[in-house]
Length: 157
Image (cartoon, rainbow, N blue to C red; front, top):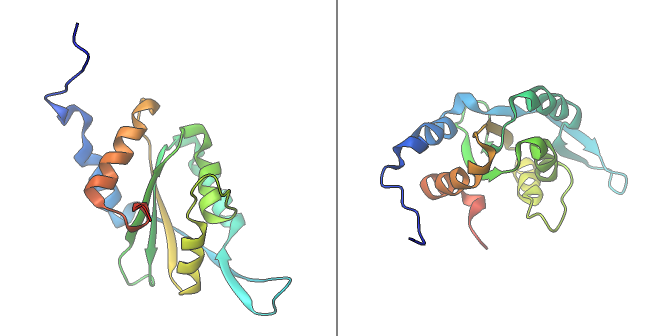
């Protein structure tokens, strides 16, 4: 009995379709930002609008996305730049995006500091969401997307 499994024809995975989806700027949902006054500080801080983002994510939940991209752009006249590709079991994707956008758990490797820096630099933040079925293949596509698109925030530091 062989101890390996080889797929000579990987075209059945339709990687290119998923890659093109994440390259297409019309698939990016811009996230609204608001100025928030910090208790310790009198100067306003630009943050993601939690209410709008929660509404957006909840509206997308029935689609059961399990692959996501984080994007940055300078303004609505400049193109989106893919910064990060991630995956999460489809039922918990909303929680994972919260970690990237509002509250970071140090154990998860969330990109909250990078998102906050982009906002401080007056950039806009956006997300793109995609569903892979069956859900167990999401890891394969995450790796394929990272290898093909080389997002800056996916690089190990």
